[in-house]
Amino acid sequence: MINKEFVKVPRERIAVVIGRRGEVKRYIEKETKTKITVDSKTGEIIIESTPKTEDPLAVWKARDVILAIGRGFSPERAKRLLKDDQLIEIIDISQFTGRSKNSLRRVKGRIIGEHGKTRKIIEEITGVSLSIYGRTVTLIGDYEWVRIAKKAILMLIEGAPHGTVYKFLSRKKREYKREKFSILKPAEAP
Image (tube, rainbow, N blue to C red; front, side, top):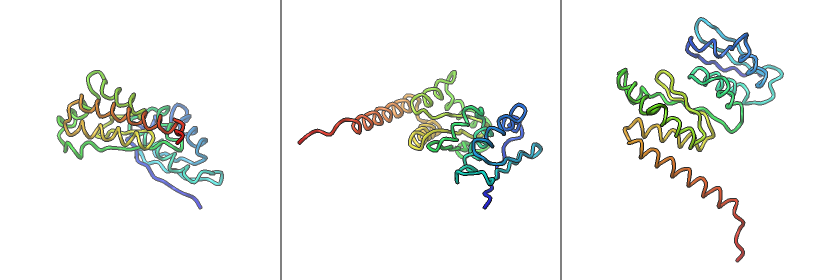
């Protein structure tokens, strides 16, 4: 049975999905053992399994990599989605700002921060990759950290002070380390 997925990416990102001399498209096809068909005029992309496709999630992984590139990630950063423990989350910030360009610009500015500081802090603490493109913020990472990074972004969108968001992220990092340490610590004898 052939599995098929359809993705539409912005036309200005098609060249990035294809890559120089088709290298990005070929890499995704090789890694996932799928067939990718790109319509450069419409931005529509079809991802299909092939008789060589072994991983039942391969079509979805290829779709997610292409989706990430379409949302502004470099192919190198999007390739992270080929790992089993990585996922993509897209937040449409226009849901919170409406169609006002000034409001959208303000919210994007809050997420990026002065000289990219806020974005960098979110990425460093959570290990999640962020892309702010158009009306979306896209996250790539493991489930738990994507959830935490998304919460931090929603806090910023809702107007929380940056310091409050940084404290939230730091607290989550400490909790994670404490939990990880307690799992690794040998059980105490009775």
